[in-house]
Image 1 (tube, rainbow, N blue to C red):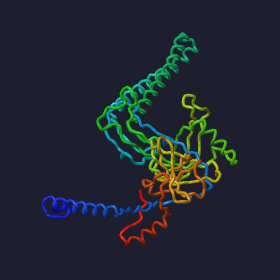
Image 2: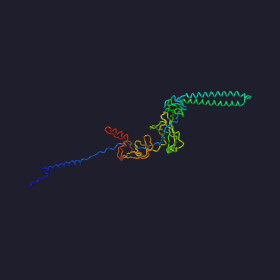
Image 3: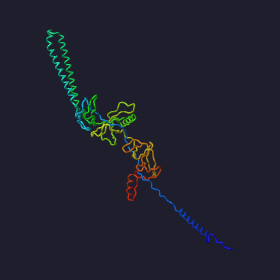
Length: 406
């Protein structure tokens, strides 16, 4: 009986092919088995470092602020009172002037001519009066002797009265001409800071109306005008009465446009008699000393008055508050070091801090730096400013520093 070689054992083309397949399958299986045995591991990043502060409650002064504008108690407009050409400008713009200082010199020739004509008319009137008085003196004894008709004496007496009136009229014209001549020498009517000149040498002024030449403003003291709403006024009056004071007696602090505070404390000097029905506001004025002349008319600012010391309130840094769609939020770190976003109701601003009306409690940890790293419910590594500084110093040599800045 013939013996047939098995295709899996003997030589031949078929046997070689099948053996190669088996070898390939074994290699593939080995690779797959090795791949299945390896296990990929991912190391989770550490929680982000954030800077926190402990929320505390403190007695916050209850204040009221009103926006307004500064103005001078006295703005004196220097105007031309006669028609003439400007010959000289005798002051430096933007400097202090005293009452009576020369400011402008106008052409005096027309005024001198009018004065000369008025004086000539006065001399003529006085000569006529002198003649009439002599006529009366001559005719009086003749009329007593009935040497002349009484009518002649009466006419002479009437001429004397007319002559006196003529002298008075001529005197008035002379005084008017002297006034016009004096108006050519334009002087400061008040002491203060003078502004820019409105005319130049050679300009014709005073034609048809008094031409504005310059303006002088008193700067010390200076006034602050504001409009107080009816609601704010009533609340301020009520709080002031609760502390045993009047609103008009409360000291006033002026805060300028750059945020700085004027060193001089002011006082209320005027509260209008009625509320404007069109705006619902009450016109008010405060006065401030301005010895350095830093404050100028037209500046904007706001005034602050302290009405009372309110109940203990929570103050937070303004940088810790975020606003989204009209709602204010803060980030709080819980006892398990997880972050949560908290809506809060804000009150008044005091410098760089904000009064929190509701939403926070004393003792909670508030995030002030690292807000961009926060995620709702995510763990964080909270540190105070001191702890963060120590950690940064300790890890600086290791090539990494905890970061909590925005």
